[in-house]
Image 1 (tube, rainbow, N blue to C red):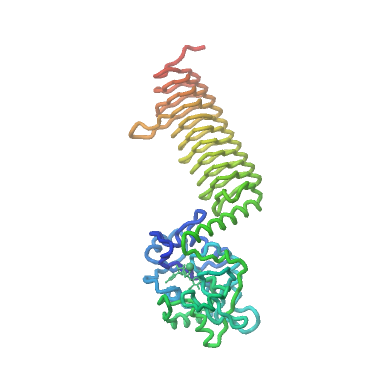
Image 2: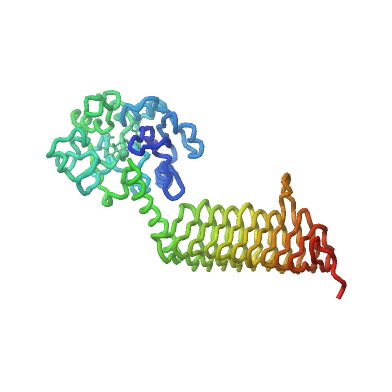
Length: 448
Ligand code: UD1
Ligand code: MG
């Protein structure tokens, strides 16, 4: 059987009070819409069409699904009509409709909807929908029941005081027999408080025809929280972050305080790694086993090996090898690569540089566009003067080199294996292997 999904995301999102389309507002590093699409995919649905507006459409490439523009936002029913017009007719097919503003939705909810039209005996339903009990007051549409079936959905703005007392709500996730849905949306009217074509009015259409509309009760209202403003977005963000943290903890990561640890989907974090409070890990970063991350570490788009310590430091677009210790207060960025057993200490910035095994820079230094050989030691206050006002120049330091405190290396420069610079050296010429230099400008010292 043909199964496809339509995701509605064309709404104006007025309540966000934003220049950014509502479903592009982020939680845990991904736009709201990303989560709905990801949950649909996890449930096995791959044929997904998103209904967008003019602002959202140019951003759709990043989601890897088809989309269609709803030029005028005339309501959820109209949006589905626009979607169906863009889809070839699949007689006997099934359609799941979901709103793009419910990022906490789970794949289980979608899987549950798949069989919902056929379950419970022979008499199939034309439509089924997710309902949820929710504390009042609520701005969700109310479910008016008739026995076990749904008779009507009433939007808050059209509801009577008695109807507002109903605590069973419309979550905004539906399954339809496609041919039934095509009929129903063709006949929607907009005679309601908002003058919109409501998808929810398809219920009455089916009931009038003597067809069944089946409720599928969801037991956790957070899973179907619809985000309409930034306060609801913050609530969803907290919940999503808690979920992601919980999953890593179940997988063997210690998180001291999930409330102040900020993670994203699709991270890899190895067993027995401990994350201390105030840390943020983002953008597909990978963290190895037995690491100590934080407190207050910020790691993005980076790969961290095993047994690495990163304390109060910022690491972006970089790789840190096994057994390395970083921080407190270091900044490693711009495709830096540390091979392992390195030490990067207080107030050290490393940009686009390579540290071979065991290289160290423990205090107050800037290493930019540099390459440092095995076991070399960069003394406190060392600066690679990589920028001459026009170009970024490279510094190459060999292995077992000792760079004295407060050395400035005026790049481009090469310092050979086993060389040494004295404290306060300003290196303006290449230093051959084994040579010892000092002074400003640095000159060779007498051989020992
Ligand atoms: C809707 C439901 C309500 C339900 C609630 C759950 C209707 C009429 N009401 O109300 O019963 O309890 O969701 O969260 O469906 N959209 C379009 N085009 C439009 C209008 C809306 O694509 O012309 C999209 C929006 O981008 C949004 C979704 O449809 O993703 C729902 O629209 P929204 O305005 O948020 O509806 P609610 O008032 O929340
Ligand atoms: Mg909504």
